Length: 277
Image 1 (cartoon, one colour):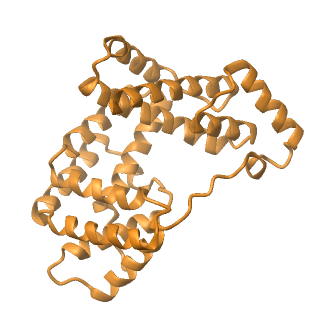
Image 2: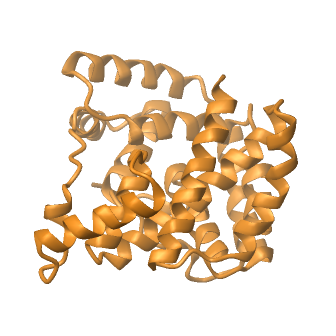
Image 3: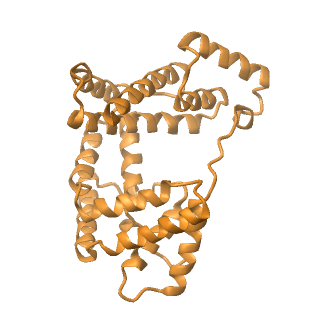
């Protein structure tokens, strides 16, 4: 693959912003959280070219397990959408985003944050650029379309507890720990709550930390959205208190941290339910 400018990769930069904000949440760094929220709010405004490209990019990177024919249709619609973007304005908006990151966040390591599936992020951005180009690289475009066509059809495989637990954790231990959580916190868990439990039981600290950060980040997004569209007065009154609590309490990869994370998952589900009604 030809080398591409990762600083102008809309999907990659957005993920790095979220990763850095999640790290700031864990570290109780409210100033950095507020700064990144401001950058995202200013630069990814609805209606902007950057927002339009990000929505398109996100659809391609997140979609999975579709049929071959549907993957073909998705690529066709994505190509039409990309062609409608204002390339000149989009380029200027990306320059402003980079300027904001360099000036306001001002961390030399920001662009070095590793994003999973980096190759696919690079492939999608290069493909979007080619679709908009007045003189596209046809050979490269065909190759990248083929790769993303396969990516859209991939199956997301959820590992079982037995697949994930550390070598020194036997099946009996896993079973006992599951029952312990069920007895203390209730037995009806959402998929996200189950994932937290599995990661804790498996002693997979790295994955557990990542999942806890993601819960916090997703809850921040839901809180921001609900403050704009929510009509449940009781929930509206609680959102600011919840936001302050999240900013002041770092979730740790411990049993107590998992318990807190499960409560946040429940609140996240309630907020999303209210938003989507």
